[in-house]
Image (cartoon, one colour):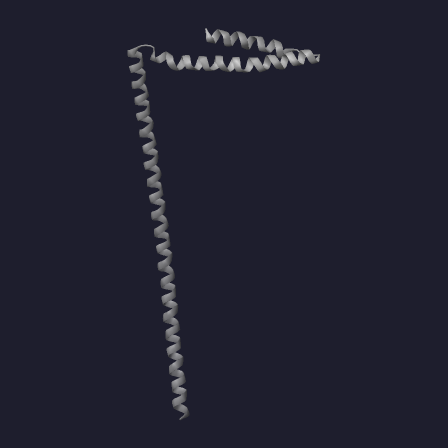
Length: 140
């Protein structure tokens, strides 16, 4: 019954909006009709939606069947969400491991560079100290 009313009210709307109001009185009437039509249409729409929601729960067996359906749907959604979370966690762990390995590899490379530079500089300094020592010994 509610769906019939919404159809009849929606079929009367195009007639009102099809012709442009020519006088101020007609404009005022048109605005007043719109102000009434909107809440009436909203009530009819809500009524239809409530009827759709209540319909599956008309009888006990239908309600139990619907609840079982909701339960299995919820279970599937929870499992899907859990799988997505697990996948995201694994991906984050893999990225963290790759980043850690890259940083460690870079740190080892820099350490080797610093150690080799230090060894080369130490050798060079020792050589120069010996040269200066030899030059001092030759001057005496």
